Length: 120
Ligand SMILES: [Zn+2]
Image (tube, rainbow, N blue to C red):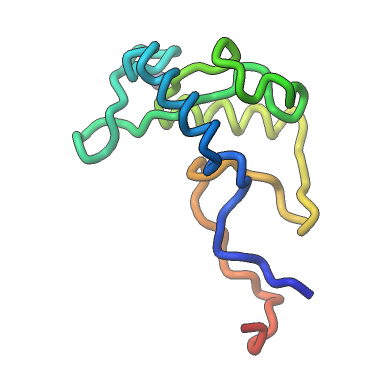
């Protein structure tokens, strides 16, 4: 059995093509949330962290994953809101039996109570 790795979520979000197109989208949107217009330069500057959202979800339109016109900048709260609504409408369960999350959008999971003590 392979144990769950430390890496959270989807390798897509750490891939180079994604990081490049994400940076481009942030520049185009001037780091402003496309819902409320707030500036998102990250917590180090006392601002919300910017999130680049897929307007058409990757689940339904994987071919648009790296289409810059399918992306938009959202602040953390609007991104969370959107992610939650999306999951409410179509809950997605991953192969490990947990709902699929986007990295950074939800608080960390509680420790799995069924985990065997000597799994490591
Ligand atoms: Zn916002």
